[in-house]
Length: 173
Ligand SMILES: [Zn+2]
Image 1 (tube, rainbow, N blue to C red):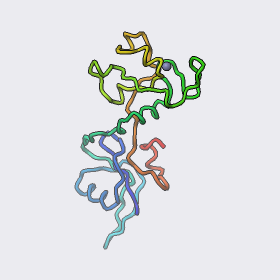
Image 2 (cartoon, rainbow, N blue to C red; image 1 turned 180 degrees about the vertical axis):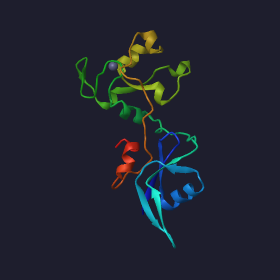
Image 3 (cartoon, protein in one colour; image 1 turned 90 degrees about the horizontal axis):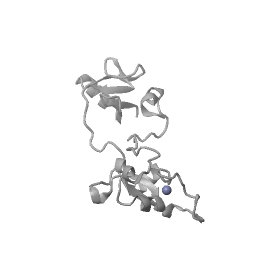
Image 4 (cartoon, protein in one colour; image 1 turned 90 degrees about the vertical axis):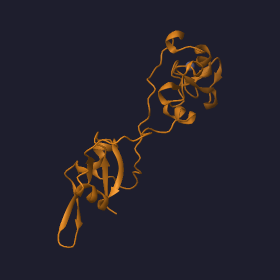
């Protein structure tokens, strides 16, 4: 099955569609070509050329674009590294070698003060730093975040098999 990469108007990849679906969108004027490469689609009387990347003319809002939040996912994003002191699994703290279980989720703005379980409000922290910070913001505790917690970028695309060269610009592969 020949596939076409569908981009939002902002050039963010949305999904992969069939050439037939891409053709329908093109005919309706919903999308325009976003690359020079094309696929041939043989019709009854003539051959159509479908671009391998198409872009929506109008931006669509996709709710929950980012990866789903979970404690586990935050640990993964932060690579089991304390955002405050930089200690990682295998690192030594007070004579103890830290394992994954020694890390906690710290809420930048504490839950008790309205902080939520969101990507930008949660970070991986060692228990010591978490305790030291307590019910304060990093600023109040005079502690510095080594990186800015962000929503990880995800491509919904099951990028199995070969990825056409024309897609790579958009997929960060
Ligand atoms: Zn720490």
